[in-house]
Image 1 (cartoon, rainbow, N blue to C red):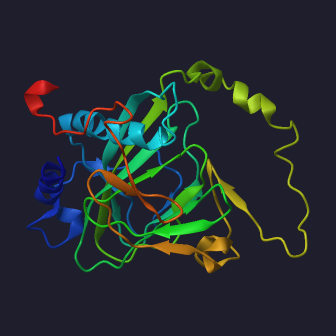
Image 2: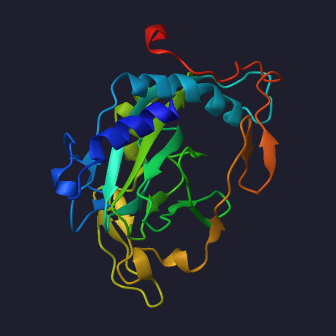
Length: 267
């Protein structure tokens, strides 16, 4: 699947010198958390490859969430695969969390980037309060809980293009209706929108739709001055945990089918 994704991506952007003349379908719209002062990200549809991405990554994500080999395993339902998103030079993705109704267990598959671009980390705040910067290379997959963990790319991208595919799933017993009907919003205090006066020693936090940034800090996120940096490759059938331990997915022990490639006529 990766080879086909890369081929589709390169088929759209190769053999052109100016990115404005490349054979891409349209600019991505409706994504307010992306700050792109030069050019907006582009969206390149991949048709049935989206469905294949969900099918091929679901056993990996299920094995990951069932790390404790519980008696009643968690089964995931694939919500969607979104992409390809193609970031352009000087893009920045504000810190944010994703939809709590459907984007519970997620993956970022990095498809490729131009050869001259500088490493562009995705930043994730984990449950221990650490801020992590993760460098992904072509074919790397990052697994994360996107509706709980603040994540983004607050550092500016320096390069021509950078493209990824985003896969989102939720547990089969997840109470989607509770979140779809906005019940979760009722738990927010009614005076949440009131702006408090500045407090000495506390940085300004600006909300941009569903994302946030800190304009007084370098690269718009203050905790970037103390991060855990990751730039490592995984192995098939294994993953690197947040405590930097290489672990096996144990597909057989968890009674989860081993990931396989799906052909077009099997969809």
